[in-house]
Picture 1 (cartoon, rainbow, N blue to C red):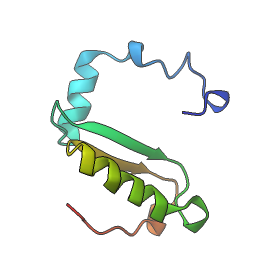
Picture 2: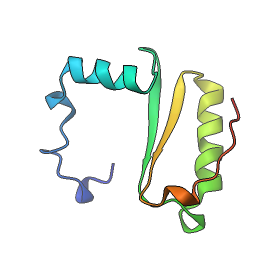
Picture 3: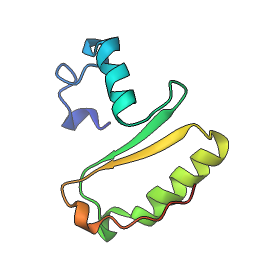
Picture 4: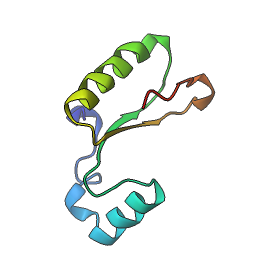
Length: 84
């Protein structure tokens, strides 16, 4: 999170109910022990996707319960292969 770009009063994790968290975990098939690395924004060569994926793979090697979710405004540019 880049605090200068985020309204921390609006995006306050303490305001999210446990019921909402459970519903989202269920919707995206996330186990309770899973941790999420989230990429939010444009995805393309300017944003170093290879380095993001290398970081995720290094993190997953240390913590196998990490999932990587990419939310992008240009999903047609996202081309990934399953490395699981």
